[in-house]
Length: 139
Image (cartoon, rainbow, N blue to C red; front, side):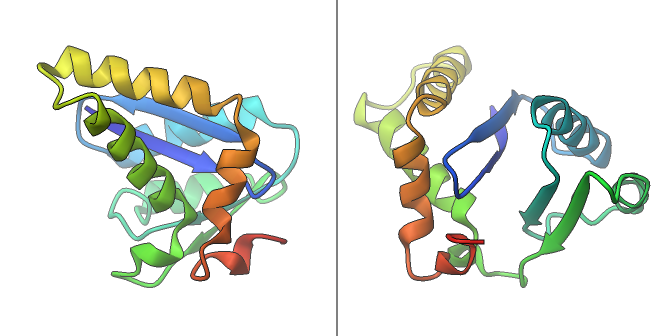
């Protein structure tokens, strides 16, 4: 079970769970969903997963410059990614209940946590308070 998500310094969350490997097409699908869910321009800070840097993604973003811009973090710098603090929180919440017994159980716990997080903007904003991501806290 996998998760792609984005968070804002205002406390919003957008996410998609999936079972397969992240691909450029799947990432573009997530970006399309993100643009449908928001009316403001999206300034997305991403890690350098190969699917994020794919030519198809670059072309898709270029065609939508009025709605989105994509910025990449340095390689091997997860501490600079606010979304990694969400991931740590998610893993802690899942493991607090004991190890999941199945992929279904894992998916259910992930979905429950992320759905609850949608209604906790102050918790999401707290991910931006780590000294390594404060650069994005007040943009």
